[in-house]
Length: 546
Image 1 (cartoon, one colour):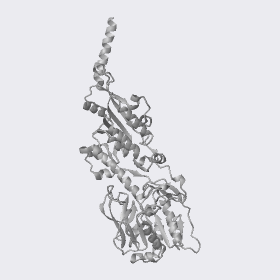
Image 2 (cartoon, helix red, strand yellow):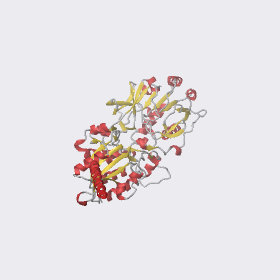
Image 3 (cartoon, helix red, strand yellow):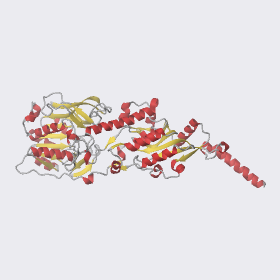
């Protein structure tokens, strides 16, 4: 009996010691036999898309009906996802009748941060990244880039696409503004980052996010639980994962660590190709295998031709080549492809013009000299360059998906014609300010009629234009901003003798070319390139002369 009593006493002492050491984290009944309040950990560590996000929303709705749950800790590590899934999860969390804290453990970027701001407090582990306030539109598959096929009949001009392409971009801006509004509303006086900082969609380290007021503290789950317990006045509580509490295999736990997503799967889970997601999370698995390459074409005997440079790993959208071929064919010209620098030099001997698009490798001195000598003989060169070249492109005859300018490299050829400093121009105009006035479309409005190419044009809608620094006699400038240079006027089209720089490519592909006066401008460029005269020449200056 004495031994039994001693054992019971020792056991009691051990339990008391454990209780003192573990404190409120010990899962023991509260005073008077009442169960300990539960703080539920909700993992959000998957790409936000249907049906996974729907499953989590459903679980949160059931959680809201439980009286034994005092609070929720979101454990966030996600690059975001679709707009519907992100906004549904945010709205559910925002309305959840529990105290909510969020802990960023890895990444809460784009839609991941949108979800996190539904919490009352946000913590971030030291090496986490936070931010990416904005939206991304993937103009894919082909129906977002090309005209309606002839075999599709619609009862209205907008039935197929739903709206004009420029309006779609304005919608992307409005969607991004919804995100920004949620951040501003939820962070309130704690936010020390201005709208211009947030609209840049930048990512911030945990310490930077803390300084800007995007998060409240550097810490983890136990820090969030301790502060929540103090806020709720809990002397005892239990940390429980959502799946364990509901007895279900919840998406967050099952999909843990799933950070990348095939673009095809993301597109299939959203009615519109607009997303709150960090672009690096996309696996570009659509387009390349489905697109036919652009076969090289040799000049035909007796027919004038324009050379297309394909010898410098050129990033050429397929749609641009289709437009170029069609416009030249209307004028009786052939588009001949140069697949090597030697063939380029040979074809330039009898060419009418040369088109260079987004070279990803530089011209050698020999090739550059061949181009310069050709311009001296009267051959005209149109050099199209887009720092943010995107979507389907053709590289040396094979199709590839190129996000932004991963493969593109500035070339020295324009420098021979006193054009340098290729850089991207942005508007950074808030949503709702006007048609086409957003960060990726820049509107150019020629003011004077002293240049053939721009005379009587009222509005060019240039998609992600590039600018050059030049004092060429004829140039078209836009008001915009360049990162690192600030706001000002930047030349996006410039002509020096027989060399023409055009700082956009996508603007002259099917569907995009329908915006503003884009088609009329390109038609004049091809007239100039082909050496043709006529009505398009208008009130010419020295810029249009050979």
